[in-house]
Image (cartoon, rainbow, N blue to C red; front, side):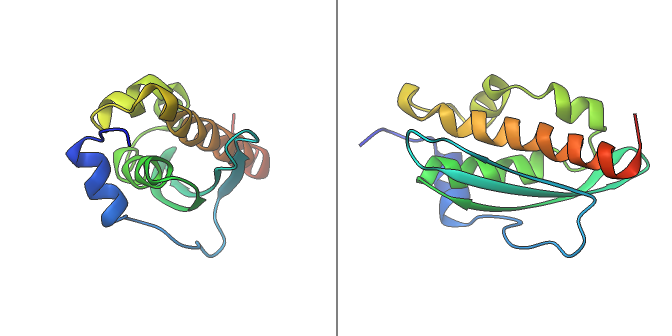
Length: 126
């Protein structure tokens, strides 16, 4: 079993901001067909900033932990800042992930970019 950082364990055991969001401003679902992890992200945007992120993730502990971590990390960020967030930044921010679990941070970063694209499409915002 891979060794996980204390922060990964904390977010897995005590996930934040999990659950449905009524009438999100943007949402997206991403999945990894190899491992079966699936992540749905819902965001609320006000004044060009993400004010809330909710998520539903089915997957391994690091997938759940990175979903929770991302939901706290991006609160208050501009859309451009969230779009620029990389999987490496997510993995590093949560204390690192074993090489075979980095795909979990890819899911979170991809889902966030897709949710912002959905928001832009709905709102007509550039």
